[in-house]
Amino acid sequence: MSVPIIRTVADLRRVVTGWRQENLTVGVVPTMGALHEGHLSLVRAALEKTDRVIVTLFVNPKQFNNAADLAAYPRTEHEDAAKLAPLGAHILYAPDGGEIYPESFATTVSVSGVSKGLCGAHRAGHFDGVATIVTKLFLQTGADFAFFGEKDFQQLHVVRRLVRDLDLPIDVIACPTVREDDGLAMSSRNVRLSAAERQAAPKLAEVLFAAAKQLSVGDRVEKVLAEASKAIRAAGYSSVEYLELRAEDDLSPLNVADRPARLLAAAWLGETRLIDNVEVVHNV
Ligand code: PAF
Picture 1 (spheres, rainbow, N blue to C red):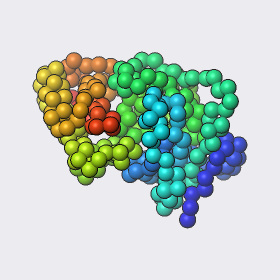
Picture 2: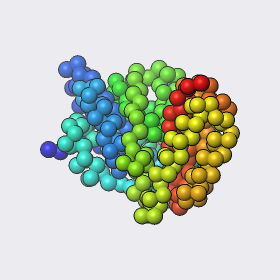
Picture 3: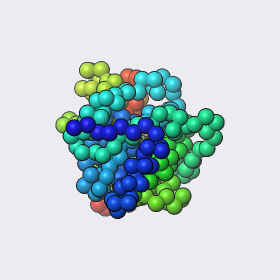
Picture 4: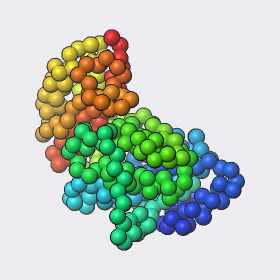
């Protein structure tokens, strides 16, 4: 069994129109490939909720602020298709570059507010690139539901906001972060870690979970974050790009954990930038 691969918008629309004539619901799982169990969990969630599932695969140059990072991004379409087939995904949409950014493409979707700060402060243009490609993929697929992982928590907020602001007829479904047995959040970037870095990597999640527990019982935010940042660096991370407490519902910065919140971090392990976030339950 293999998953059919579609390369053009015209072919995609033909298939989706056929599904619509049969009154079938459509789900989309946007990816940049290098699929891991985190992506597959989104595909399973989509298959449970919708009749037909499109997985998209496009390494989007507009969301990379660093040419080396774009060049190093793993490209494994053949393996990705092999992983999708047994799940029963209906289509892998892996468009040619020109189907997404035709010559003289001149439009950018830019979401203010939730795009600022956190990753937005360190990756110039990243969320404009994400918002633009996601809008295109929603319009090209015409899906009813889109599935995103909570691992990219700020991205999830950006996508929700653009769907709301532009009245896009699609529901965004958030799915929990999938972790390795040792707690490391699954990411396509994990394959870049050396053996020693891979051993140190789970400390980020461990520290975040411990800090979230302290915050949920009312420990002082400033103190908890300072100690957590120190512990991440002590584990071998060369720098902590950000470590912040933000409101769960609108990502506004919090100095006290007095409402449902997320603790979000980005940190560098050698040449690899890892991000993670955990829920902070409001108990006090
Ligand atoms: O999360 C990702 O892999 C990408 O940002 C996305 C949503 C597929 C857009 O390119």
